[in-house]
Every structure is written in C-alpha cells, then in structure tokens.
Image 1 (tube, rainbow, N blue to C red):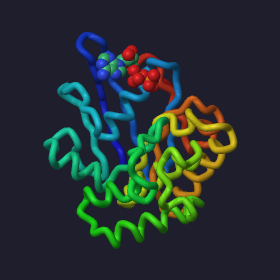
Image 2 (spheres, rainbow, N blue to C red; image 1 turned 180 degrees about the horizontal axis):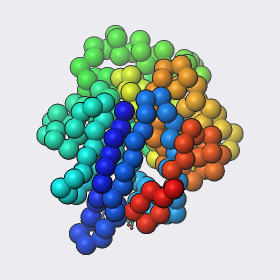
Image 3 (cartoon, rainbow, N blue to C red; image 1 turned 180 degrees about the vertical axis):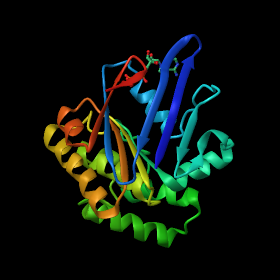
Length: 220
Ligand code: ADP
C-alpha cells in the first residue's frame, strides 16, 4: 500500500528526515511514536502527500503502486482527494458550516452532487453516533463530537488510507478511547489502512505495528 525508501527532508540546512524506509500493508494500523522533534509529523505529511521529500537519487514513494514523487501538483491533489483522508489534532472544521456541510466538502471537491454527498455524509454521521447533530456548527459540539465529524469528513470519499496526527491529543480520556476504538472498527468494517502519529501510549500499543522515530530515522 505504501512503500517509502530513503526519504530525506531538509528545511534549509536542517536535516529532518535522514533516510526513512517504510512499508505499510493494506488494512494495517501502524502507529508512529518518538520524542518531539524526531520528524514524525514531517514523515506523515510526506507519506500523506501534503509535503515533498527532498529529492535524492534513490528515493522512492509509492502509494497503491503509483509513484507519488512523479505526479505534478494537480495530479497529486486529485490523488489525495480520492485516496487519502486526514485527521489532525485540531479538527480544523470550518466554523461557519454545519457538521453535515463540513463532512460533504471533500465530496464536493471530488465532484459529487449534493444529494449523493449528503446521503453518504448522513450514513457516516449515523455510524459515528452523530445522528442528532447534522445541523450543529462545530462550536455547538463537544470536542469528541467535533473530532468524529472530522473523522466522517476524512472518510467521505472512501479513502484507502487515513493519516492521523495526534488525533486524540485534544480529547479527554473517554473521548480518546472511543475514537481509538472507532479506528479499529473502521478498519474491521471497511478495510482501511491507518497511519497514526501519537503520544498516546494506549493507542500506540493497540496498533498492529508500532514504529519509533528518533532523530529523523525509524529505529527498530
Ligand atoms: P515531531 O512530529 O516528531 O515532533 P516534526 O516533524 O514536527 O517532529 O519536526 C521535526 C523537526 O523539523 C523539528 O526540529 C522542527 O522544528 C523542524 N520543522 C518542521 N517543520 C518545519 C518547517 N516547515 N520549516 C522548518 N523547520 C521545520
């Protein structure tokens, strides 16, 4: 599903990723842990196609067999919209839009019509226990509810891959536990692949595989 080889990233003279190799299989839930500043978010942004690795002779980044480094920006945006969902620590919902409108946005970007998008959004919100919250705006929802709306938004285009960066970093422990269980339920029901950067030990240890990053590299 994801094959990355010899990924480097420099920010000016700062060498942040120092040759990362990584293979992630379909349907796996992989956690990435490690000290702050190790390069976890940078790696997630690169394998999530939001950022580009610094070009080297032998770097490889493939998702579903497609060579990501050879796509132009337009093709990359389309690929991302169709294959990838993101969940961030701060849900980044648009405050002036309702839950259902926020969830529909990636579907509209993909070109879905309103009826189909809303139908799918309702299915997801129902599945996530938000049946009575369709028309609430983010500030009318609890932190856990907001994060579940963000999960629905990440799922609306049926992505194969979900990237999450500290998804429960901003939640109380009960909401965090519910969110973590939800990831596993989604994987079991829909076969999605998850890559999760987290400081949450429980979540990291629940994963099928836990990768540790130290100083720009994945260590054993
Ligand atoms: P982690 O997620 O493990 O805490 P990050 O990937 O966020 O680590 O950051 C790794 C290093 O890269 C840090 O030293 C950070 O300051 C630096 N860094 C991250 N993004 C940028 C950027 N856009 N410009 C310059 N330096 C950056």
